[in-house]
Image (cartoon, rainbow, N blue to C red):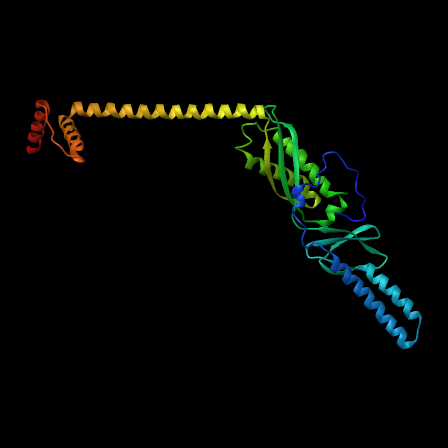
Length: 307
């Protein structure tokens, strides 16, 4: 974010620091070492001039050393690995410098902003947004994004973090307004991708790229939750009955086919009778009393096998 720019007044709906945000500490963002290095360079140059002034007994060298130290401190900057600094020359954009130790022309160039290029996360939500079937829902999402061109991000926008938040929120409202309440759970991945694509088209020209959008939660009114639950139960019961009817139909068709086979082939019916008798005494054993009609079937089967 650009330095030396006053913050805008608070606007309703602006993201606030929550307990979840306070759980995470920002690591590797201390600039103490970079500032200390600038001081040491300036102090080292001033000390060299003072040593020369003492050696040559020349007081003007002391003043020159102080001036040289101040100038070096103002024109030398240390840019961290994940940062880029925007350099202006006479108020006009000149270049994006860094990382490492950079030098600028004294009184001509200066660092206007230092931008962090690491990936960021922005939480945003859409409250009481109407779906395509006019159902009010609350949607909570997280946006993952990063700055890839520090020059565009600082020269074309005053506060790009605030801009990304507002664009993400309005885009979420627009996309959710075209989705039905029944589709939100099924199309969540598609909705995430659709929002990310729209944001990418809007922010790419400002030097910002959208990595992904993740919808964390969709809150539906309680009275509607009961209706949706009843509808889901009714649909499951309907599907279960349809499946049961299809199975019964297939079984009945198999019975019809078996009856036709037994009617056309006497040997098939006799084999079935023998199989029934064998299965009835296979596990526990016992004596089988065969009626005369069934014994005739066995005799008929014996004749068939002899042929």
